[in-house]
Length: 610
Image (cartoon, rainbow, N blue to C red; front, side, top):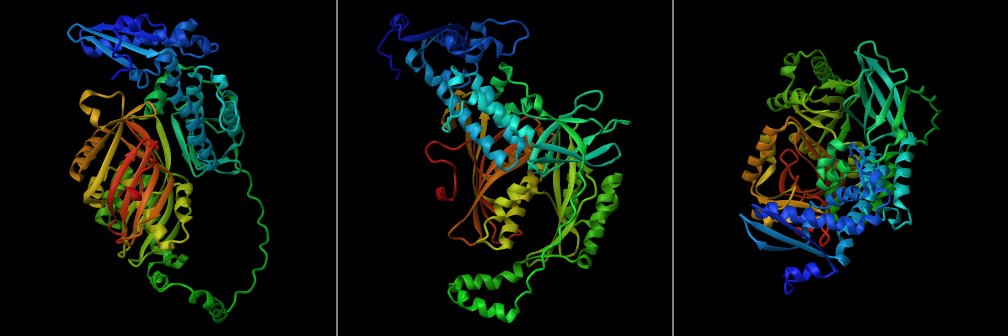
């Protein structure tokens, strides 16, 4: 019930404690929108004095006065927060008349959630920087800065550490630029491979563009320090500068609030974003390794360990005894020779475009994935890969890591690098291809040293296969890994709430999020439509948090920060999977849920909820 339900419209309009807006239209929606615009205009007047030089901050082709600029900024709140002001329908369609109002003392609450969003995004940027995820760090810092400019008294916004964010955020962005280096590693066929470093170490991920002599390039992505530059005929890399991407205006649609603000605010130009490409420095001379101490004899080691082993419980000892059949063994050069020969043949086929020439090297499933891979954008091998081969598990599968490949898309301006892994079955046929996780995501899994190396490898391979299945649109594989009775909760960020969806829509940080509980067949039908309508899908994982269930054997709860990109939709949120890996060859997903951010009441979905 509105707080002023007992007051008439005229009484509210005459009360100086309230700001009001009215609208008329042939439909309730049209009248409501008109009332919102009228209310926004009144709110703009009330907060105009709290914006400093706002007319200089907004995007406009002509000069604009401070009132118009302030109204444009306040309009960016209308997608969610302002719609939560009180509303009275004086009359309904076809001659609709809507009245909206808000207490003057409550106006500042409209801006509170955006202040919190600035703090959250700045914190996300700092975490991304720690992991050398430069794309995420720059994106979140820059978007936080744009949001900050749309808040009254922005210069008074201070974080918990006492940083004045209008100064501190640009300082952080410029400091990141100062620690980036880009070196040319090799050049062939008008493509230069580059190595991108942050603070002397390979970046986990970074996006960039460059001027190719005629125009600025599409957006390129470097992964684990590897990137590339495509040159026009006759062009050299002399004096070539790459520009680190930080605005991400093309990806702002992931978040409607950010998209609206980025389109309204001018933002800030960072001149330090341009990095000169230099030749790779000569490798430092190898230092002489100190002589290793002679290893103890096996008998001595066994004796020394007897006391420690005697304290272990019987079930742990049993598990340790089981491990040899599920170990990870790196193959010698001789053992790897037949596998290396197959991989080299596949790479030669991709380089030459003679894809069919290596069909006999694949199993049926492997050949299907190979076809999908070479059709996934314009696939290109980057330089000469340094291959390594491992035998994994009791089935004696052999995994080859890793082949860096670049991908570009005809109807999209994004190009990126993926590390492709190949898995051979017992018949030495290539049975699986997957996009590898980045180094930090892999490290998040490997740090669980209380689990066997085999268990950690299986988890990493599952996540690689999962993200690859969506990229290559392997609907049959996805069907096979979901339990018939799986709990599937999907979410989608929507522009606004509709009357028919109210029961399943939540407002989270000024975003309307529509949640849908689906069964397996419903989910797969919707996924098939998604695959058909998108030229490409790409998923990036970060911040993996994995917990093993207390019962059920090899059952794990996996929380993942997921960035989802496709031709016509994108979002960022948290994916939770409960997966049964008791049979590594047949993983079964029991639960899949998605949420855009942490719920203020229960945080993130995890194993404790099931």
